[in-house]
Length: 343
Image 1 (cartoon, rainbow, N blue to C red):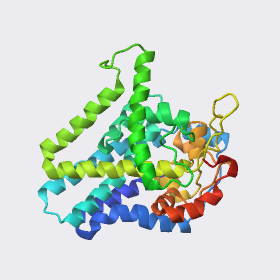
Image 2 (cartoon, rainbow, N blue to C red; image 1 turned 180 degrees about the vertical axis):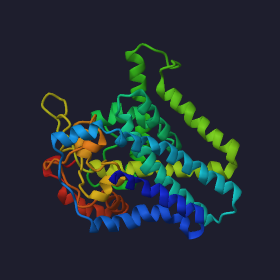
Image 3 (cartoon, rainbow, N blue to C red; image 1 turned 30 degrees about the vertical axis):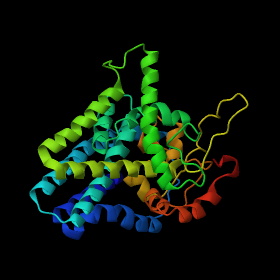
Image 4 (tube, rainbow, N blue to C red; image 1 turned 90 degrees about the vertical axis):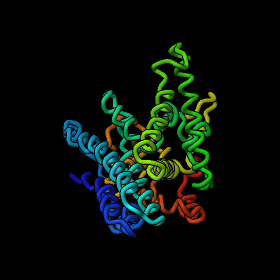
């Protein structure tokens, strides 16, 4: 039941947008103001589950239903916001607050859940994952993350891995453009392997491009220029939140190049782990990212803690705020990176 707390972000964002004025910033203030403070007060939890507990959690469909409901939450919040901005006269400050709060929902309950479902085997779950990526203009993430990031993480070939002493802002440029470019490269390789043309029905990147363009055209047609601008920038906020998480998840870590010319296998050492309980709950255990990369098919409710993983001093919400201030981030994190792993 604790994962019901993950709905706090969209609920507070909805209430804030509903009341408007300075309340429109409620979503972003809660996520990056109140949550970091609470994280400092709440304890960490390093406990792993027994075999019996794991079996029980895997049989319980409630964990999956919690993820599926985010489709209704994300699109409900999106269209509620769009309806309000075209029917209510809002100040520039209110519009900015509304965009930021919606963007937080698109990132936390959209892309984050899409990431979890994108690793599932069931076709329906993967489709839900793709639907959750559309409002953040990031459907290409589905291909690049599964076929690129998990293969090349913590190597120079991965645009989603931040280098040692690289600031968040230069990383945003690297990963946003690099991830999109790499998604097309992966798609080209998949087309060649299966001997299909660029216009093939199975060319996912072509479909993703058409879907993303159609989405924005739909928004413009039904909600006008103001709705278009709000949806566009809220999506940008959403994918920048994702990439900020990518930044803190692998910052400064590298896989060593072996004498064979290949990189060492991905292990629990190549991602930052956080056991801070609030971040774990709000992000559906994404903060146990080391175990996710070690065994990417594991469902979020059974991800485990490895004491060999590099440990973050704070939870993800707090770390995301710190990453906005590069000198402070470097001062805290650089000394925590194992010497042999500094990228």
